[in-house]
Length: 412
Image (tube, rainbow, N blue to C red; front, side):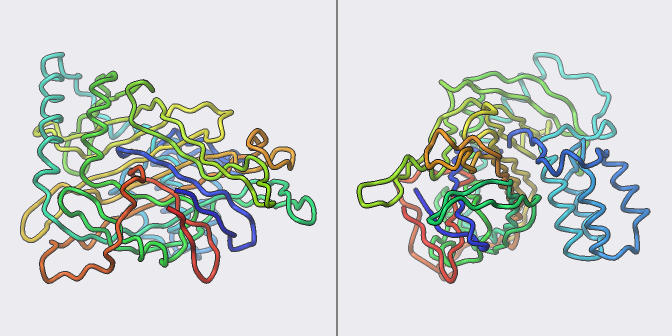
């Protein structure tokens, strides 16, 4: 799939296509602006927000922009802190702060000192995880949910080659570029995105997320079983103690293709840009956090093993799960995901060529919440009969179209 267009400020953005056939993000590297921020722990962040209680929304947002987390902020604590903030600016800044630390270890206070399981116990837990993954998607009913996405992007300083010459683009730190609220259907063990609603929905930036339901778990576990799985740690979660396995998958066993759209190769005979999609199946690693009692997945992460000098230098996704009541029964479903991708989208020399996409990196970050779950029944009206192109690779992240008011175009 390819897409192209113009951004709100007229900046000619390259589109992204991150295909993660499972679900879970590369270790975040700080943007140039973020590198100047003061590192804080989760406890220090809480103290800072307590001391700033009563501050105006804009002032608090500015304070949050001046720090960077050194630990992961868990989903429950994030919700608590967001609820106490005075307005949208500070809440958005807090979400950016938490999402940028999504792949870091949790605070030491959330890591119990319990001894790790012995080999037999660890093997039994892995068997429970595999059995859970093999059965959970079969147990899910047909349902509808709402996917609420907040898209963030930064803008590196760059020189863009235009029709009248080279234009300098000023740098901007990570900021909100759009929000959307779209229905998603899980039907016959497949996630179905309403493509008509997606095409004409609100702009959320260059990275969209899909595929967090069902097959993602099986694909991750299947790849991990052909790679390497080791004991990670215990974690103290909202529902009790969780177990964490670490895994790594070599490229020859991987089903994780990363795609970047679009790379300019030069010009066609008619003067139009000759574009292509960068695609590479990559090695990756991540975590599987689960309930040791029954193997139910609580969190899954994927982080692509990419080189800093590649066109795409970081890619990954994290998905968090919880028990959801659907038609009077409890099912484990995704409730939140974080997707992050960093790519060299700027021309280094101003020349229109693949080899020159080695300038400053652009960061694309999506924060997604799933809510309003309800069973899909005969009385439910589907908004569109369109579905994803069967030939299109599936995954939790893929390209959205660029912003081109009043409508957007996507070429499948």
